[in-house]
Length: 596
Image (cartoon, rainbow, N blue to C red):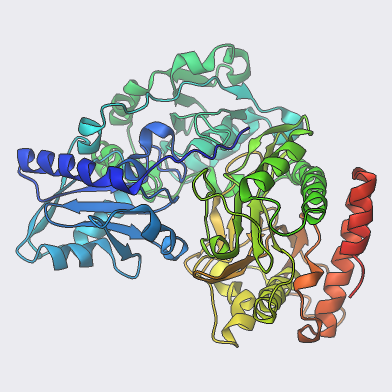
């Protein structure tokens, strides 16, 4: 299987490791060390070698950091992980609600007389360090660069990944690497930039039409790149990963070992475009005032999928839908109490594996039943594996990495007889999900401008959820892709071709969780009679086609327009996916998509 149910970190491992880290602090005359969940490439996902936060604290979430001081160690987590962190860290660590409480505010509270707090400059972006230093001014607290103190004490730290790179075919990429390099280089030249430094692995993969496997579930390879304004690319990646890639990369791309990267950066002349949000502080220190914060040049072009990428994603979603529906049919054939979470995860992966285009799952499948469903990013293990009992709701969030697209889908599934309160909450979540799916909005709006429409039915009942409404999704790339998001913090205007998730939820700690997720692609909205002709509008096209469980819906809570949308969606599901199913699943689908 792609997914493992092994326990990867235990709370009791944390205290002795924290003690060893504090010994290093004392040896170096430091008052603290910051341990992020990040690597030198500043992407969201990290290889086993770079899971320092989980190794030290036991917390395995995809975002957060630890500030380990001599007498206190704060584990900073956002709203997605505030339930999870309680179960994963020992009492030696103190969970801190972040970003409600910032690192600088917390450090001022813990070090009122000042102090020296160290950080690894490869693992923090220049933007993070600049902002934190500004907030710490006049506090007596100094952020000082250091080699990595966790690496010193992690005796069995895994080696760096060295997996081979492969070509991403033009039929799926939709544009040659030569064309991408040329058009992005010309933009650099027009803007007076001599070069751009690229550290995000998915940007490099997209630019050069290659894929890797250095990070589980993400088809990327570790490396750095410098895109020159003359159309040349310097790629800093271990040569053993690139065997046989010379013809594909061509004369425009020069290959260097990663340890040559900083010297090459130092040799750059003129204004160099960077993204301060992802540029490691170590690189910013070398560039100095030559660095111009113009963003990652690949970010927006990568986000705005071309016709081939959208067609591939749509095709992958239909095949993926068949695997999910076969699993739901199988699940419904079992009485409450007869299955466990790991059995559901295993069956779903088996069904996905029937597709030869499947390369991996796109993240650890979340299969949380009953109270586990309230843990937003729950990962089932051999020790937490729970039975699907009568009255539970199963939150099943999963996806696949196919050669032609990346999928991500969540469904909430009733097990036996579910209570009225759960159904009412589910229906509020569904109303918000439908509202976003139907939305038309003016060109120029960002995710922050429209995400509240999804929350409105919950707000009306005094409820909400502590995660964004949606994230960007790559084209056989990262399942979480920037810069587009449906979130309060997203200022990036939505544009045609961007693929995002629409995944409102509701979570009651210790009781149940609910989430419904489809992927959508931004399109130009067709003109409407009587509309202002000069006001361009955008809309969504749905990519995900799996039934939404009618058994959890309080029908009287839906408006006629909402019922019409759901019935039309279910008609589309039946039309598009039914021919791909087994006979048993076809019969199940007929019942699941019957009109309300």
